[in-house]
Every structure is written in C-alpha cells, then in structure tokens.
Image (cartoon, rainbow, N blue to C red; front, top):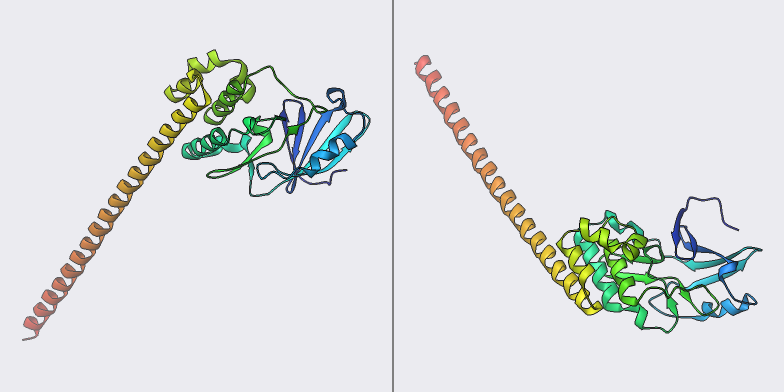
Length: 249
C-alpha cells in the first residue's frame, strides 16, 4: 500500500498519521467509525475548500480505514513549530485564531497540531474534516480547544496536556502563557497574541537595527584604522628613504 520511503509517524485524537513527502495518510480504527460502505466517505473527496488539503484516496482493510490527503512538501506539520522563532509561533497562532475554522463549518474539524500544516509566516492548512460517519470529539468547547492549540504552539507541552492540565501550565508558564490560559473568549486570546506579536517583532527590529549600527561603526573604525595604518606606513617608508639618501650623501 505504501512505498518503502522515509516517513514520520504522529498521533492525533482518533488514530495515527504517517507523513510522507507528497501525501499524508491517516489510519483510523474502523471501530470508531459508523459508515456502512466506503462510498459514504468518498463524498469528502469532492470537497474543494482552500483551507484544507484535498482528500485524494480512501481505502480500508478488515480493521483500519485509510485516508490519503495531498501534501505540499514546503508546508510543515504544526508539531514542528516548536523549533521556530517566537515571532513565527505568534504569527501562526494569530492566523489560526483569526480564521476561526471551527465556526466556518458545521462538520467536526480537528485542530490537533498533528493535523494542521503551516508555512511561515501566515499560511495554514487543515486536513481532518469529519462528517457524522467519522469519529468526532465534543467533550471540550471550541474555546478550550483553541487555548490548547495556542498553548501547544507557545510552549513545550503537548496538545493533550494543554487541553486537560491547565493548572500545571499556569504554574510553569510565562506571563503570556498565563494570559492565554485566563482568556475568556477567542477574541480576547487573539488580542493578547496580537499584542505579543507586535512587541516581539518590534523588539527584533530594534535589536537588528542596533546590530546594524554596531556593525556600521565597527566597519568605520576598521576603515579608519586601515587608513591610519596606511598613512603611517607611507610616512615610515618616506622617512626611511630620506635617511638612506642622507647616508649616501
């Protein structure tokens, strides 16, 4: 079924994900599904939404349902964002909160980091969209799910920990993380992230400008030192030549 090539395995709410170079393969236990025939899921392939990667193939065996999604190689799993600069994390968090994908469809959308893909600084794509025949989760509110998503982006905690152990995060998080935990609406959380992004970006620009100014000064000092050295060398050479001339005379 799958070629012999390197892939990464990740878990999400209802199974596992295998990430290949040009495709994403979801493996879900059929015990979690309620479809009678695979054609009930084939209808998802007709969906054409710019927010989602396309579902391109559906397969099954005795125990497992396989969902194949296309993938743009340039886009990374959101699980990998922990390695990015803080400004990238905040920018992607802003995009996710602004788009508010959970309010744009009546179907269930997973916002587990393993199911979302990003490209800095503001591009995101979703994958898992479930109709009533595929597994869904309604234990947590949309606000709790968005909080867990943003906290997973900003910290080293897993999405599952951010969803169910906020007290632990409050103990160990910085002021920004605590503000996100205590936000009472998605809009309030978005405002907090926007302000943090503005501050971090401005601080980076200022720091970069200071470094450029220091580099400029160092360059000028080096140039001045070089000129001074050249003039000194010329003077010394001229003095040495005069001394030789006097000696000859």
